[in-house]
Image 1 (tube, rainbow, N blue to C red):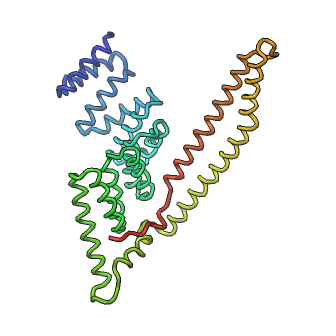
Image 2 (image 1 turned 120 degrees about the horizontal axis):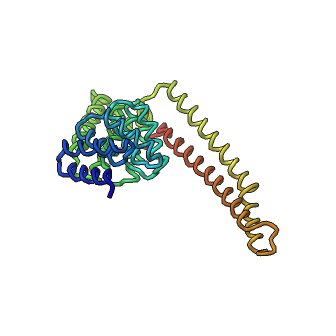
Length: 315
């Protein structure tokens, strides 16, 4: 084991034992020997996180994204730190990079939801939280956050449903229970306000009709901008789909046929099998790039889904 590895191992052991000062000194010593030591950066970032020194931890996580550009967790952790620092736009950027590298990271989607909510992008936040809950069915916090967004926008019926979902996942979730009580109290007040003099009004029916109107707290200008973004993404998806199909028929299929023909001819082939296989692999790689781009654009489209027609809810 090298000196650097030994220092990092000893530092990690100290950190696990709660010996923060000793761990920090050892990680710093390792950094002095190698400024790009991944374990030292990760350890110092962890120490800074525990101390609430998010500026310091951000610096280490930023370095980790450069040293390990394909490691999704580095981007997720950096996005989490940016959220702590209130750097919401930066958080969204790096968390989307995390998701590109690991589309099954519930934590990345959860942090993205938080960043979008704080940027007043409520629908994008709801979409991200829903994906987090889908990927991790035990993540009750995602349902609670969705409920908070609905409650903030006065969509009380949807807030109640989401708080109840959080409690289904975790019955002892006190924050969700408190939120549900608050939402149910608000719902009762709304019913009384709609029929204050006992007139022949059905508050439940009125509430269901109002649900769609309360689904989003956006201005008409914001709705228009949202529709334009969705339109632009849809047009890009259409363009990529057409280009990928054209590539499939003009490049990928011929390369497959050529590979099959060369393999059948064996030693009689006029071109070597290696050359044909290399050409085929290049075509497959290009096809996979088209697929990745399409998936990325579909993800963006899902992030802009609208709840214009909210489901009818009877409470």
